[in-house]
Amino acid sequence: MALMPVCAIAQEGQRIYGKITDGFDPLQGVAVGVKGTSTEVFSDAGGMYEIFASPRDELVFSRAGMDTLHIVVEDVTSRLNIEMRRQVQELDEVVVTESKISMQKQLAMDYFTKPSIINTSFGYLDNEKSAYHFYVIDGEKINLAAPDIVSVIAARIPGARVRSNSTGERVVSFRGGAGSVSLMSQPVYEIDGVLYTDTPTWLPLNNILRIGVIPGLQAVWRYGAIATGGLVIINTRNSVHGLREEGSLERYDQARLRHNLASDNYLTPEDAAKSAPTYLVELANAQSESQAVDVIEGYAGAFSGDPNFWVECYKSLFEKWGPEPADSLLDSHGERFYSNPIYLRTLAFTYEHQRRPEKAHELYKQVLLLRPDYAQSYIDLANSYYGIGDHSKAYALLLRYLNLVDGDLVARDTVDLPVLLDNELVAVASVSGNLRTQSESVEPEGTRLFFTWSDAEAEFELQFVNPGNQYYNWKHSLQNDAARIYREKVHGYTSQEYLMDDSLPGQWQVRCTYYGNKKLSPTYLKMYIYRDFGQPSQTREVRTFRLDLKDVSRQLLTFSIGPKGVKLR
Image 1: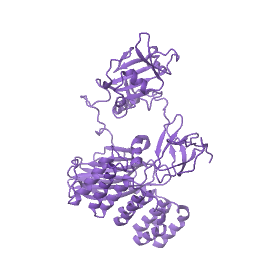
Image 2 (image 1 turned 45 degrees about the vertical axis):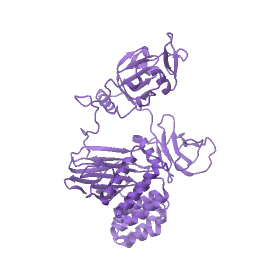
Image 3 (image 1 turned 90 degrees about the vertical axis):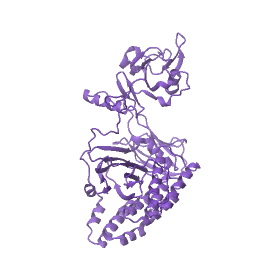
């Protein structure tokens, strides 16, 4: 594999390699660097690359015309197959009227959650999807200590210059306008749909919700010659921007289910089983224990280096022939798991599903030794103590992690992790009889769904379908929530939870669409279902799923919520 290094690379750290594509074809010339260092390589004609980095280093994948990707290296990172996306979607505006109306409504709905959207007199624009480039400044990032809007724009927009016009007024000019650099015109301003030719230095900065800046040539297409110097669009807090609820000024609530009816196009657990690897089909059809062992030996040559192969063979032997031959298989091949936290967790998930909590417990202790600075290590082991009935140790372990955070011995998260840890404490305290928490967020008779996945690189979408066949989606991917995945890597957790009350009784479904994990191995998803969460009557059940079929919606389970809690299927 031919690589073109920018500089000599010290072969230190772990080898990370893979193939970079645009989703279809390999990408040559993608720069792959370690952030904060001079280490950088480029992908070859086949999209292949190789680089060396250490855990918690940040890899940066960049190429002209493509969205830049940032991936934090973990202790287990080796193969990373990267799919890059283009920055510009051409012909965004060449659509039929009906589609344009639909697109505009969606942009209006997304206005308050996507700071890349600006409201203009000619409709909403999203600089992540527009056919031409422009800038958007979120009002939350404006320096309120700046003297005026001229300074704000100059500080945030590349190529902006502050100068004095013929009357001595401070104005801003942009490179890339229709005029020459030496004779740059000043931009026009559109404030809540009203056009101004003078700079609105009178506008209070704390009243600005969002600012959009369109360079001269693109602005001329919209406004004509008056916008030769560019266009500055200002959305203020005094005006109405974004979609509102019908008959009111309340922001449109996208959490309210309206017309999002779930499709019947998904795989049932039985359908998914039909797509199992050939060796699992043969194991399922084996008529004796010895025949099953022969099947495993026949495939061992091809799969001996894949720990997932041994996990699946173990599961098949356990389910059909009992624990003795299954445990014997792992006794012979278990060394493949001991140094890799992903595979230790995968096997531990499997033990939990099989109601063998003591065996899972030993593996979770090993993971904590390997990853003492990962929040997930403490969450996993605390849940394991819960599973073996030692609630006091579960509670103490969670407090131990919080003490590490308070002592600045591990990184502090201020977004998802604190709530998750608080509810973990609630779950343990509720059944302990002598432990208490300060949480007041728990509703009686509530249901808590807790998810954790084996591989931090896993990308997937969870879909919750209510008894009315309406759904809510949660997407875990770099494209949809790169910031969340970055936080997960920095703080070391791979979990998500959902709290549900009994206001919608009936049968619910949980579906999952798997998008891969940047390598060729499956990901394992574990799910805890807490009934009567936060109450002394709380119970917990566990399910584990192998995610391997990509880009296909798959039903994981159904459960009923009613007056007596949750019933699983």
